[in-house]
Length: 138
Image 1 (cartoon, rainbow, N blue to C red):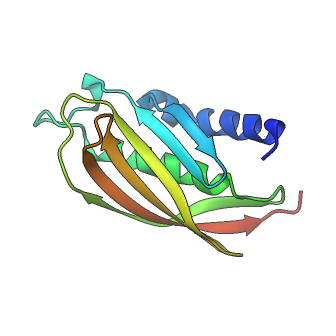
Image 2 (image 1 turned 120 degrees about the horizontal axis):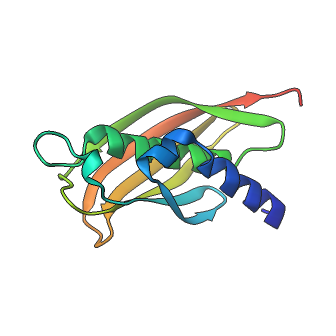
């Protein structure tokens, strides 16, 4: 990936108002892999004092999309087709990291696996997502 392509990907990955609302922070990026951080905030808590599962799922979805996007050609776009999550442990007052990796890149689909962990390495959740590859006429 060239430097201009990397910069474009970085900019597009963080220009989402929703990602900004939740506070996602890019940590690492390479073709087919993205590491994003979700800093802890009390605004992410649900009524039982745990980080809301929707915030965790959103982090995984955004990181997955960014990883998928990093494999696309100029005339391609992608969209989430389906995604599942397994919640493994509760997250209370810690930041977490989403490590998304493309595990299959085909002509019409991309499959991404994501691990959500605390910064100390405790596994919080795992996701598996499928993205559809869409050809553009640009």
